[in-house]
Structure formats: structure tokens, C-alpha cells
Image 1 (cartoon, rainbow, N blue to C red):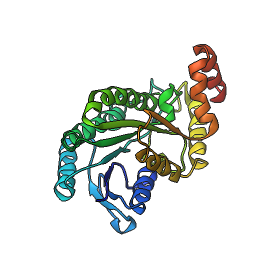
Image 2 (cartoon, one colour):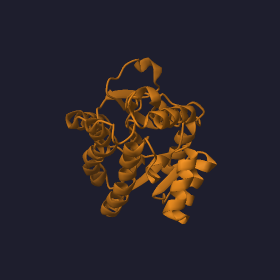
Image 3 (spheres, rainbow, N blue to C red):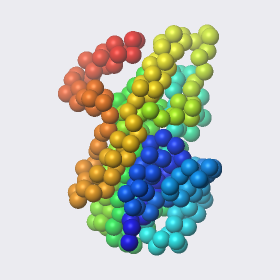
Image 4 (tube, rainbow, N blue to C red):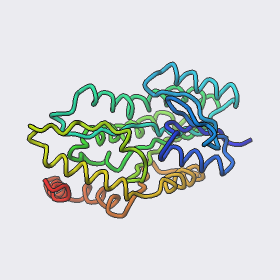
Length: 267
């Protein structure tokens, strides 16, 4: 029997690339979207699931179990971006980012774990971010939410290993997706003390996405992880400098690394 894969946030970008690639490789793929539409554009089944609504999570997973009898692999990919100076970003938008990127992912994990435990096997792959390894200026909430997901994955992994379940993180760098259109941008206030630096960094972030890597690289990495007998906990997918920045943060004094970031972001 084909392995059954659930990919959240699969209507566009990295999630769609992963779901499409795995479907082409013969997996039975269920992708999710808050509002599934244009399903003729997909070679996998797209079902409704909103990570902010536990009822939709429960319903979606129950429907897959009813149809397939199992879920072998969960790719926790749904997420949103948020930018802005911490001082000026609405706290409600911060909570929404954490509820989506962190608590939403956890709710999906909690709902699928009993089924994987029953079948004594399962693989959960969380899409995090290289930004989650460091606090980036004007992206602090996004960095924090993805960093939190990295750490909680480590904890859950140890808790469920005895039941034959593996958890891993895959942290992408900049990829050419439509994330800009789905990102919350704190407005550029005319009287803001951060206006000039924030505007310059918004332009820099958008340029990085526009020139980012092809999402197929994330799909290929996920496919490779699935075929790895004993996967690592953390994987990074991105350019050399993006991945090297994590190494630098680990080996350099904090203030030295901070200065490198501030020079890069012209602060």
C-alpha cells in the first residue's frame, strides 16, 4: 500500500511543491487549505483544514483515517509571516502568528499522534525557518514562533520515540513563493522612529524572496528525509550564507554576531 501523507498549507508555495512532488512519487497525498478551491490545479486531494480551528483539524484527520486507515507522514507546513518593529506591531498580530506557526502546528501533531501511536509508526516533519535560529530585526515575532517550533519538536521527539514515531524539523531559507502576499506587514507610519530602517528592510526581505530558491528543493529534501532510516532532528535548506549564518551564531561571541546582522541589515 502507498504511504499516506498529510501536508498542511498545501494550496501554494512550499506546501504545494511538497504535496505535488510526493504525489508524483506515488504517495497518497492529502493537502490542506483553509478554503480549498481550484482543485483541478492539483494532482493530490485538497481538503479543508484551518490550523486555528481545532474542529477542522479533527474533522480532516478523521476523514483521512476513515478513508485510508492510517496517516504515515505529517508535513506540518502551514504558517504565516509577520514583519514590523516589535514596538509598533499589534500584539494581536503577534498572537495570531504564534497561534498559526506554533500552536496550530502543535494542535495538528496532537491530533495525529494517537493514530500514529496505534499503528506503531509515523513521521512528522515540521517546516520551520532558518530565521528561527536567530532574532532578526523587524522579523522578531516570525523568528520567535519558528524557533519555538524547533525546540518543541526536540521535546516531543523524545516523548514519542518509544512508540515508533519520529519528528524532524526542516528549516528553509528564502524561497520564491507568494509568502509576501500572505504576510502581515506592520504599516510604515509617517511619524515612526523606525520608518527609514523598516522600509529598507522590507525591500530587502521582498528582494530575497523574489530571488529565492525553487520550492522543489524543499520537496526533494522532504522526500530524502522520508527515505532516511534514522533521520536527524534538524535540517536546513537554503543558500550557503543562510546556512553558514547558523554556524557563525554558534561559534561567535553574541555581540560579534549581532554586529554582523546589524551591518547586513544596515542598522
